[in-house]
Image 1: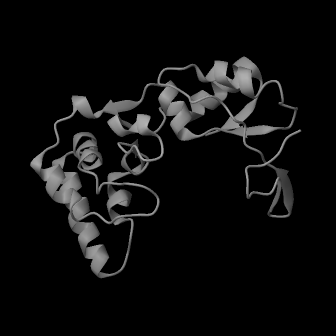
Image 2 (image 1 turned 45 degrees about the vertical axis):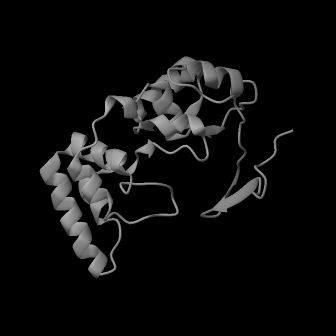
Amino acid sequence: MLKPNDGKQLEIEVESNKYCRYAIHTHFIQIGEDYIDIIEKYVKPIYKPGDFISISEKIISLCQKRVIYKKDMKVSKLAKFLSKFAMRSDAGIGVDSPYKMQVAIDLCGRFKVIYAAIRAGIGKICKKKGIFYDIVGQEISGLDGFYGKVFPEYAEFGIRIPEKPDKVCNEIYQKIGINSMI
């Protein structure tokens, strides 16, 4: 018997279409696991034609080993300085973490990050949020990890967004015949 997560409804309506949704509980996914094996183990036994699975970005990223370890990083003075001015969010830690700010600097370059920080500072005055992430892009806004309160395992590394998610979905369909999205 399929059931939704606690506090959620099984059936939702979107633009006059009704959908049933339910969480598929898995083991705690580790870095480097094969997402095809995971889907075959947990999804395939209950999958019915017409079903569509939605997979967390973080699961695919962990399977793709798209992690950045704290131990391999050198946090710069610039990252420490800029992170002090970043806004805190209920969505989790962001570039207010010197580690995440350093990843932004490493991936985008110092000048782009400084430009984004200046523009975000001006945005704060105008009460506009999200400017920093709009400028530095999805790779930085999607960065997760470096935070161990919910999952202690995630304290020592950051998790990047998946590489080529469309290719991943195509591979899942080709190998297993299951429609998916990330």
